[in-house]
Length: 426
Image (cartoon, rainbow, N blue to C red; front, side, top):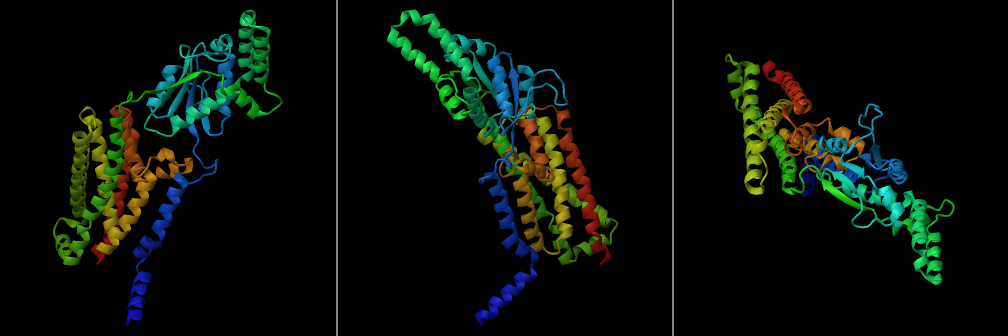
C-alpha cells in the first residue's frame, strides 16, 4: 500500500510541470543568481566600477595617479566632461553632477597643491596639507570602499621617485643640523626608497609608509543622512509584494470560470474586453493603495521623506501599479487553475525580483546580469523610485521609466486579451 501511494505521488509530480519547476528549476536558478553575485567570481565577470577623475593639480604626481587609476582593471575611468568624446576635462562640479545623476558611484578629486606638497614635505603631506576627495553615492556600499583601497594602492606605487626627490631636498636643507652619523642613516633610508628594476612590490613597500596624502570620502547625495536609504528597501519590497498581490487577486477570473459566473457575464453587454478592463482598473487601484500604505509606513516608522517627493511618488506609483495589474491579468489568463497560477506566479515573480533588484542591489551584479535585469518589470520601477527619493530628480527625468512601464502595461493588456479568447470560444 505504501509503495502504491509513493507511485501515485510520483506520477502526480511527473504530470505537474509547475510543481517540477518549483522543486527542481527554481532552486537552481536562485543558486546560480546568488552564486554569481556573492560567490567567488573571476576578475573578468566582476562588474567594473565606473569612476570620474578630476585633476585640479595638473602636476606630475597627479598625472601619474590618474594614469595609474586608468590602468586598474577593476575601474572604468572617465576624465572628460562628455562621454561622446569631448576633449574638455572634468571639473569638480561636473564630477559631482555625474555622481548625483547616477552615471558614476564615485568621483576622485585630486586637489591643487598635492604635487608641490609631496616635493616640499619629503613624502609626507601631513594633516594640514591638501587632501584627495572621494565624492561618493553612499547608496552603493561597495564602490566607495573598493575605490578607496585602489586609490591608496595607486598613490603608493605611482611616484616613488618623486617622493625620493622630495626627501633628498629635505635632507639637503636640514643636513647641516645633523651629525655625520645621522646624515649617513638618512641617506641610506632614502636610497632604499628607489625602486630597483621592475620589482613593483619593492616600489610599493617603499612608498607605502611615506606617501602621506589624506583621503576624505564626501557623501554628495544625502550628506550623511543614512535614513534616506529606507527608500531603497521600501521600493524593493513594495514592488515585489505588489506583484504577488495582483497575481493572487487576478485569480478571481479562474474562480469565476469554475463557478460559471464568467459565462453569465460574457452573455451581457460587458463582453470580455470590458471584463478585463474592470479587473485591470480594480487591480491598479489596489496596487496604488498597497504602495501608498507601504511608503506611509516608511514615513511613520522610519522617517522616510515622503511628503517632499509626492509628485514623483504618485507618478511612479500609478504607472507601476498599472503595469503590475496588467502583469497579473496575463498570468491569470495564461493559467488553467488556481494552483497553477500560484505556482507559476511564484516562480516568475521571484526570478524577476532577484534579477530586477528587489532582493539585492543590481550594482552588486556583473555587467551582463545588470543588463539582463533591465528586461524585468522590477528594475524599471525601482530605478524610477530611486530617482525620486534618492536623487531628487524632477518629474521630466522620469520619462524613461514611465515610458517603459506604460509600454509594458499595453503589452500585458494585449496579451491578456489574446489569452482570454479561449473562454469566449468555449
